[in-house]
Image (cartoon, rainbow, N blue to C red; front, side, top):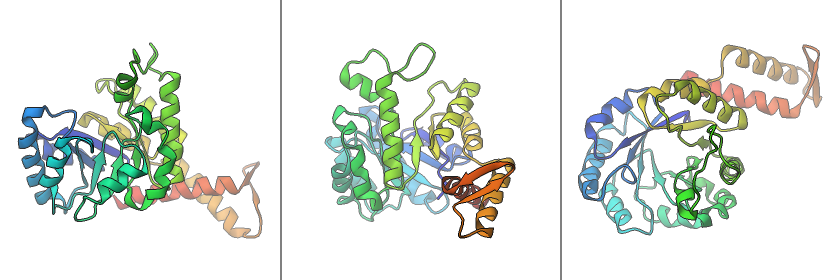
Length: 282
């Protein structure tokens, strides 16, 4: 399953839906939550339902519903009944219990993508997602709702780096996703005009172990896809490592280009080759 880029589009802007699918994003997130005003939610639900019914067969469509504890969520789930979206994004998720509650209400069964850091209580539940891994298609986080929830003045330093509490939240989601063996999805880069900054941010995310990233504008899709796609040099290195270990199946260490490589390097090589294979399959 390839999830390098996931592009948000407001659910009350149906004229943008086809453009979002054509952007090259691996998945499109049709939003019923924050980007849609209360008065526009009914028409957004109708537009999203119609689009998913028409396009689910040829596009990965994720629907972000409203938080579980809200009446708007009940309305969302009624509108989405019997449609086959690729996944449901769950905001304000608070661990395995919230995933189980949502999964019990989805018919047909649909994978869930929780946003795992939007409330203070959520931080303490991130490790529990491995208990519901079969319901998940990934795990992601956000740096907007949590600061508001705790009264923080900002989540970032003046130079754009996250402050310590939000670096912690990001790291916990990264490890929580890998513990559940599902893709770790990096949060958005809010300045859609700063493509250079985006490229740096996405490269850092991949370096750290994220396998994809969310986007808020179509212009961000190509840089994100590029960042999370292994290049020819990486593929060549990974093939060399895999071949060396295959030639010495009883050895835990091989020598390549003057360096001693052990089994963690083989694990990394296999990850790179798998990512490359997913990219080739498109």
